[in-house]
Every structure is written in structure tokens, then in C-alpha cells.
Length: 133
Image: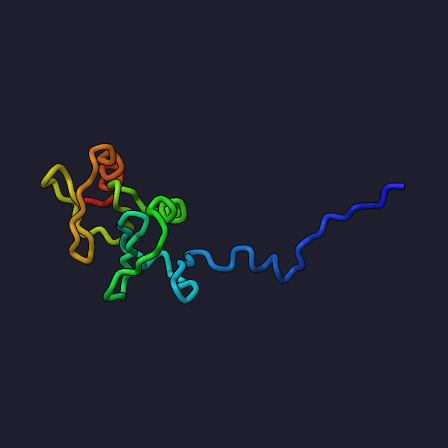
């Protein structure tokens, strides 16, 4: 005789938690995890095996022991753009698109970031999406 095998299902209260925090991300810190609103992240900058997260409202960047690629995988679905090997930006915080030095973006925090040659197309598409007067 073969015993009947049942596939365990999640209780209803756990199913509700499946997507309860859209637009938020947990960043590992020394103390545990810091929960950030994705929409408040201005940009992320690679620093070896670490990444600096520049967050709206923080005076100092948040340093996380993850490569930029790891954050890119988590933030691309939220509209972030990898415009340079070491920079991932939130296009909501672009202040200016500059033609100088082969193309740059100026962010709301005043930082100017050079656009890699192979990323020009992304910025052109982004620029064309703005209403122009």
C-alpha cells in the first residue's frame, strides 16, 4: 500500500505576506537589516565588493557589503538604470542630462556621473520620454 502524500499548503495568513512590502528592500547592516523605500534611493555606487547607497534624507551614504550587480538585480524592476560600470541610478532623481565630456547626468544631490558609451542608447530613450517645451 502506498500512503497518500499531501502537498503542504501555506496557511492563509502567510499567503497574505507574499507581497506585502512592494517598493521596499532589506539591506544587510552590522546590526541586522535596514528596510529602505526603493523610491527614496537616489543612486548606488560600486566600491569594490561594497556598494554605497545614496538615500534621500540621509547625510551619509549607506555602505553595504554587496556588489553593485546584486543591487542591480534587485532594483532594475523598479526602473533603475545602470549608466556606468560603477553607477546605478534612479531616473526620478536626474536633474540634468549634460552633453559635456561624452555625456553625463547630474543627479538631484549635485553628483555628475559620466554615461558609458554603451549606455548612451538608454539615456537617449529616457530623454525622449520627457515632455519637451
